[in-house]
Length: 102
Image 1 (tube, helix red, strand yellow):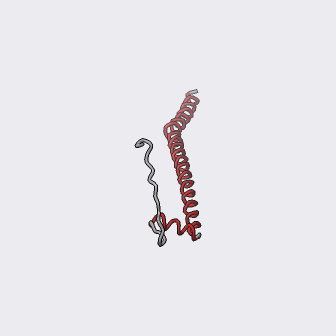
Image 2: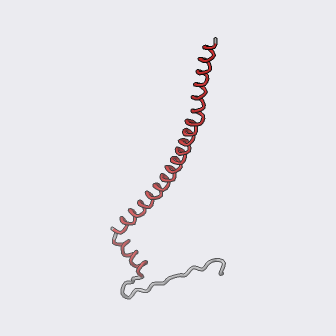
């Protein structure tokens, strides 16, 4: 009977050690991994949003490039940005005031 108690005690002690190891060794690692997974998911969402914004900007620039192929658009841009005019042409500009000033 003393041997049974020793075997039982050793078996019980062994199970207790395995349980303690899992509680203090494995479970914190699992929780740490879950935290990393959440951070990575948040980063993926952020990068997807950023990627979508960049795609829209690329589309905008592509549209601008396509507009430059048109002679009329090229002339309009040059006139507006560089304030160029044709000979004997007069340009009238209207300045809009804020409604608060009126």
